[in-house]
Picture 1 (spheres, rainbow, N blue to C red):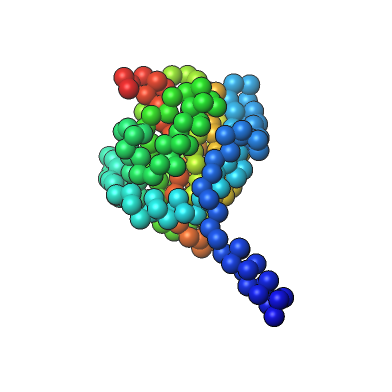
Picture 2: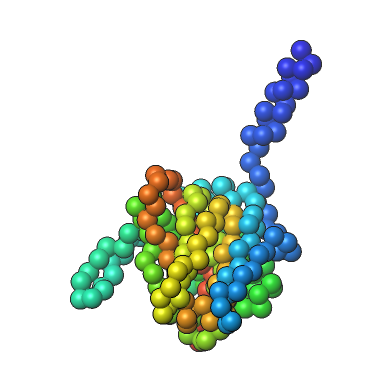
Length: 212
Ligand SMILES: O=C(O)CCC(=O)C(=O)O
Ligand SMILES: [Fe+2]
């Protein structure tokens, strides 16, 4: 009897959702230089309890699919997006806490958000620079991944092989230095079936030269 109730307790323990928490020490941060002036940092497990945050954002954010004009043609973007011009309107308190931790750590005031919802492996973001949110040569752009693991790629604007990372739910990917000037990044479609992924891009008026 004792052992079977012990087992039950253990099963209960494992089903308890992890509390939402941010590693404000950035202890797992791993920075690599892309070249002499650009860098990419990955912080595995930066946010714990990310599944709850993923579910809340998926449910509560007013996701929309937008058209985009490219080469005189109009495309429906292969993903859903949402933007929050003020961090104070963020759809979950953990996002505000995350922005504060990022601002403290990277010395950039993150005050607005851009989010992507990749519904399935068919959704993607093409190669691009964050031109409108980064108008100064040196920028630091943190991107928090939630939900399914997808490939994030970055390659020199002038051509060359890409650096690939596969951020898991709760991992942070940070582009820094001249990476928005000299590099392009994207999230390609996946060959393997997968669930939904949300990426939260932290933006800053000071990097966009916008009055905050
Ligand atoms: O989903 C990602 O990891 C990156 C998204 C991105 O680069 C963007 O929205 O500008
Ligand atoms: Fe981007």
